[in-house]
Every structure is written in structure tokens, then in C-alpha cells.
Length: 109
Length: 169
Image (tube, rainbow over all chains, first blue to last red; front, top):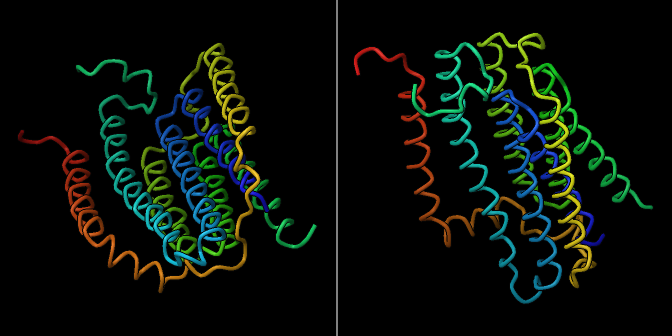
């Protein structure tokens, strides 16, 4: 199967995430769309690692594993990001009693 | 069309349909459940690409831990379809058009690439197994691995400090 299928799948997934961030006003849904974009990048990294493994695997057997280690680190960073981000959303809900991002148009107060 | 291709198309439809329903559905709880479907489909893609370790980590971290955290926060705030903030109709159209043009530009730019038809290794290759990934992770990437533990610690402390009620600061 050519790499283009995975490239276009990841592009579509990323674009859906971008549209969600632009269109929705609910802070939690915006956050979930950011997760979608991260997953599109992860999927593409794994697909490229398998592409290079097919080509270079005979000469450098472990070279393509780097991409999968990167995906692992992206998941680590995403988990840390979600914990902090949801804490911020909880604090915002406590102050404004809403998760509408339109209330967050200024940093002061 | 062999079994691998059928699986690929099935998982792709599941992924994109779930992602679309995350954006479309009004109720945040439904959005989260569709996002779980999307993450399971992406895990299926990882299995298809023979990256079993990442598939398992994806299920545990994303579909397990992160989505439970999202559901917990949504149910803590008692959000439902009625509490959906009102939105501008024009903003919806403009956002959709902007995102679609991003997709158009990306597809048009990537379609002409030389390497776009390179084959991909499905169902075989053993770089995604835990044994090989662990060897790479603990030889070449042991320093970033330790740094990520510091990142987790700081994220944990930051989450506690941010979410705590301000009493005496």
C-alpha cells in the first residue's frame, strides 16, 4: 500500500481538528480537537517509519524505530498537557461558570 | 482487494467519521465517546502497521486515561447540549471554509511529490515490538526518557496548584 493513503488520511484528520478548533466555542471540545491533531501527527510518524523500514531496514535494522520512540514521547507530552489544560478549564469554569472561550478574550480579570 | 486493504478502509472510515462526529455533535459527552471510537480506530491502524507497542500505549493512555479525565471533567461541570455556548453562524462558515482550504492546499502540495507512491510495510517488520523499541528507548533516548519524568512531575504539581481553590495567596 503506498504511503499516500496514510498521508491523506492524516491530513484529513488534522484538518478536521483544525476546523473543530476554529468552529466550536466549547473549551473542552477545542481541547479534544487538539488531541485529534496530535494523533494525526502520530499516525503519520508511524507510517513514515514503516516506509523507511521497508527501504532501509536491510541496512539499518533499528533506524526506523526512532520515529516510534518519538510517538511515545508525543504521547507523554500529550498526557502532561491534558492534565494541565483540564486544570485550567476547571479553574475557568469556577470563575465564569461557563466553558465558552469567548469569555476569555482578555487576560486581565 | 485483499484483507489488509479492507481493514485499512474500514479503519479509515471509522477514524474520519468519529473525528467528524466529535466536531459535529452538540453534547460534549457524545463528543468524548466518538473521540474514544477514533482513538480505537487509530490503535487499529497501529496494529495494521505492526506497531503493537504504540497500539497498546494508545489504548491505555488516550482511550483509557485521557478520555476518563475528559469525561470526569465534563460530568463534574454538568455540561449538556443546553449549556452549549451560542455561536456566530458566520464564524461557523468561515471556520469551515478556512479549514477546507487548508486541506485543499495540503493535498495539492503533497499530490505532486515524488515519493508519494513509495510502498509501506504492512503486517511485517519487527521494529514496533516492545523488545526493539525498549532497546532503542533505553540506549539512545534514555536522557529524554528521564527528562519526561521531570515533565510529568511538573505537570502534576502545576495541575494541583492551578485547580486548587485560592485560599491564601
